[in-house]
Image 1 (cartoon, rainbow, N blue to C red):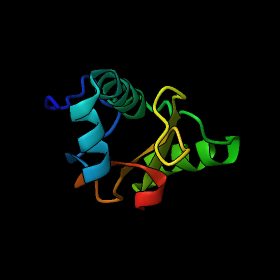
Image 2: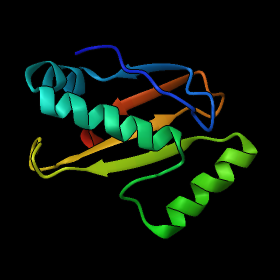
Image 3: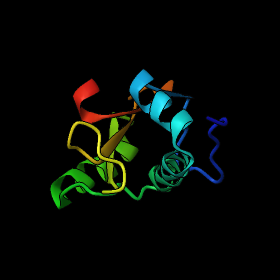
Length: 105
């Protein structure tokens, strides 16, 4: 998997890391690696992905208050254990952003 990068982020991401499960699949599947990069680009532009309206409002508030941000992105081409979702979590102190599968939380 190539290094992930962001351009014109709406907030500081800190160090960008991925869990072993996400990393391994990205190394095996270039299309999944592209999906991760696109999802990360959405996350840093405050496009919270496939979460409900209440969670989107919570993230918008978290941007102002400096608390944790959580996005979810779905792509049915990449089911893992029957789930085609990745989560991207930016810590409240903006020290790190982690890309993971929900069952790795």
